[in-house]
Image 1 (tube, helix red, strand yellow):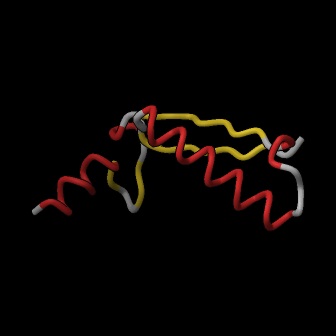
Image 2 (cartoon, rainbow, N blue to C red):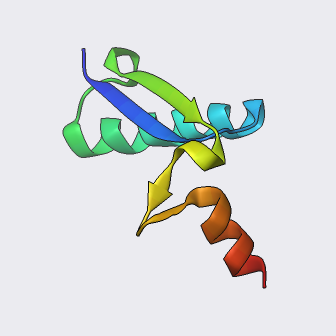
Length: 66
């Protein structure tokens, strides 16, 4: 069973449903594997628990709003 992992900031229920549906559809098309074989795992983190370039996601988002 192929498993797809998403690790990122918290998502709404609607965002999770859409992410699972679209990721599964694309993976199924590319690999020619039935959708029913794919599992999707979503791991969510607070914005201050993820970082890139030496800054937290919360800091980066705040800077982008300026």
